[in-house]
Length: 112
Length: 114
Image 1 (cartoon, chains in turn orange, cyan):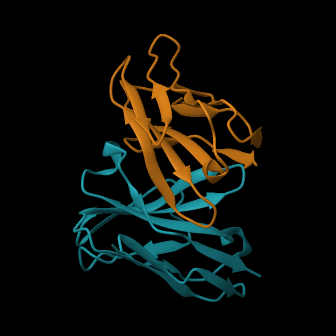
Image 2 (image 1 turned 90 degrees about the vertical axis):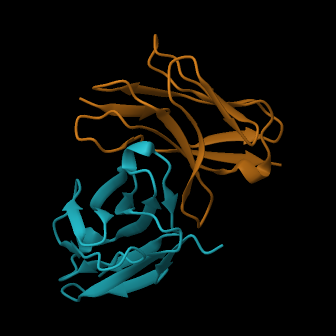
């Protein structure tokens, strides 16, 4: 069935480290892909998106490339900051039920 | 810069009590929705609305009611709270419909049912 699988957290990094959060998906159709971020005590907010294969979404130093051949949309950042500590959610919009399909979220903690 | 506003932020109920979580948005979005967020379960859609006067069930609607009398407001009602409804609830809205993926979320309402 339709799904989004994210790497399990928590992920703990030191400041300025390289970040990768893996996301793979299965979809009925041809999805658009999204990354949302949830900072402590706040609601989710859209971080970036990609609408077709090989598109790269980017925002706030984060990037993710839509890889159709591997059905993946991994989130990367070259140098994380303490302020990036949050939960990151991957999602797509091509499920059978015509609703967003969400991953379970990956918690990131960045230590100074 | 209000966006999506949820009240209350925290609430403790006893089993069997009723309450309403309020949600208001000032962006003139047609689509509004309610999610619950539970550890290990991710986000699950409870109810949604594509416009005033129109509501529909999501993935986990049992135990919850909604109404949409205006574009701005989308309250979620728990008629008889159960411990299984202990969760964090998020209201969201968008102009493009859920499949646009561009949802604006409120800050959440943490509900504990004893």
